[in-house]
Image 1 (cartoon, rainbow, N blue to C red):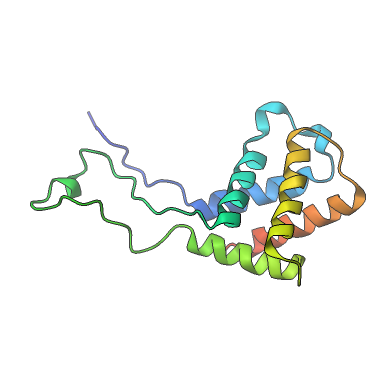
Image 2 (cartoon, helix red, strand yellow):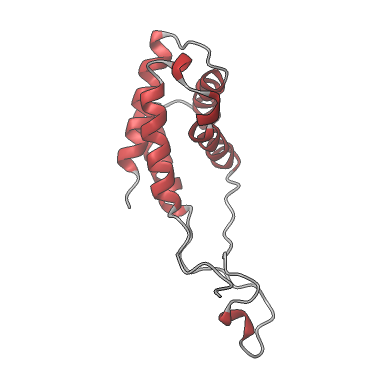
Length: 146
């Protein structure tokens, strides 16, 4: 009987790429977002908060009984050499520069978060917000490289 999953965890870049595609489609009709399908909206909101405060954290996800944790002399948690958030942060940086050229980061993040909040409440977006949401999330989706 296996004690650990034999599959690798999902790629964060792939997950956010999918979330961006879904939310870009939602921008046209926020009333159509069912309550049980809020995960992409909430996930992107959390991502924007991490981006706002540069609060990304790297950690490995091996189990307690992983063979690598049993090696002699290993007492400290080791970080992966490839940070999961770097490609996501780079994609957000380039998207912010393209969609919100010249606007301070704090204002741009607030605008995106406000749109996501309205979407989570199934509140209708203005035409300008719809255009901005489609532009931001489709640009972000294209900027994420898998």
